[in-house]
Image 1 (cartoon, rainbow, N blue to C red):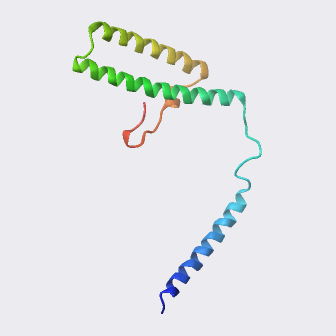
Image 2 (image 1 turned 180 degrees about the vertical axis):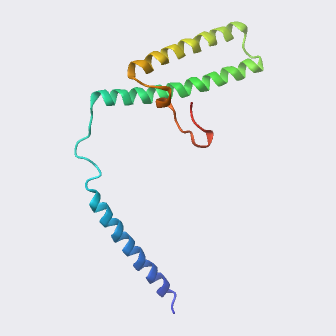
Image 3 (image 1 turned 180 degrees about the horizontal axis):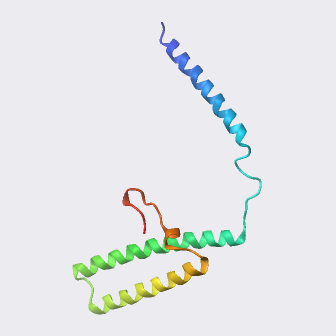
Length: 119
């Protein structure tokens, strides 16, 4: 038995697998539709969802940084007050935007892999 014989058997099996996969793909039809459903409301809501998700991620990062700085004692009382007001205004504005686009907190959630979920 030569070294080529086991390799030839594997190649034949792989060729059969490729043909089987090709038949399955042919049965699926066109995976890329000729026209994209570009309903303006869906597009606007999807874009708002993406933007608000990014804003929420940045807000949470900024809050964590502010808490670290507070715990380290590197912020004055005025700076702490100003940060608190800013975060309250941002949270209020986020709620209004979510309501305007019909989004819930769960719609803005991201799976961050090993870090867990955003919310």
